[in-house]
Image (cartoon, rainbow, N blue to C red; front, top):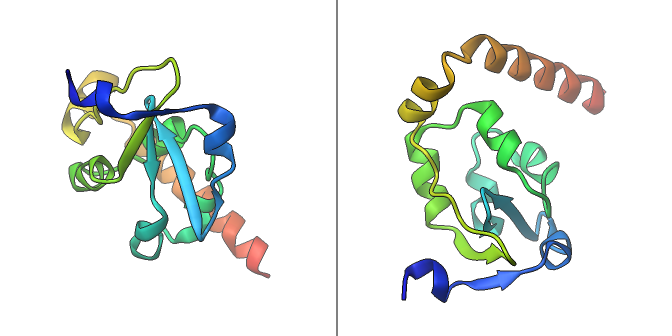
Length: 123
């Protein structure tokens, strides 16, 4: 039996119920991750993570362009998989940029827009 076969399968509804700072799960490429204990250490702050709490955060995670270290941390937070789905292992940042081309301008724009949004939200 593979490691994936031993993981508990969660429905989308089950994952969606874990959407607060004190109980925060996300889906990434078919895996279910409990990032509650990591939230205080997240370099982008808790707000950006809470925005995707209880949902499929794959696109948001990839759009930011996380490092290989971030992907390793994510692997350690795996608690299950989405029912009926399969887990794709987090691709290294180097492999991701090679396969999709350079997305640095899009990342910079996204970070800038996020910072402006946070600034106006705080005000």
